[in-house]
Image 1 (cartoon, rainbow, N blue to C red):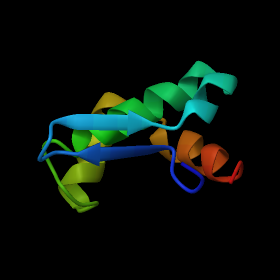
Image 2: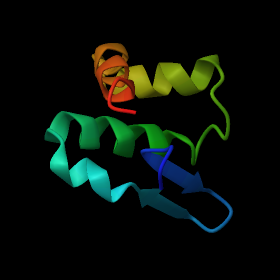
Image 3: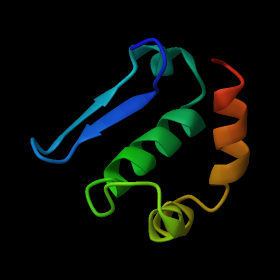
Length: 71
C-alpha cells in the first residue's frame, strides 16, 4: 500500500494495515486500527463514524494530522 495506512473490507470482515506502520510510534498504529475497526459499523466517513473514532481515541485529530504528514 503506497497511499493508505489501512483498508477495511467489511464485506469480507477483513482489515489490512500498511506494513510501514511498524516503523512508526504505536500511537499511529492504535489510531489506524481504531479507524479501520470503526468502518465495520459505519462504512463511510460520516459524522457518526468520527464520533465513534473520537470515543475510542479522543486525540485522533492530532494523531491523524501527524500521520498524514508522513505521506
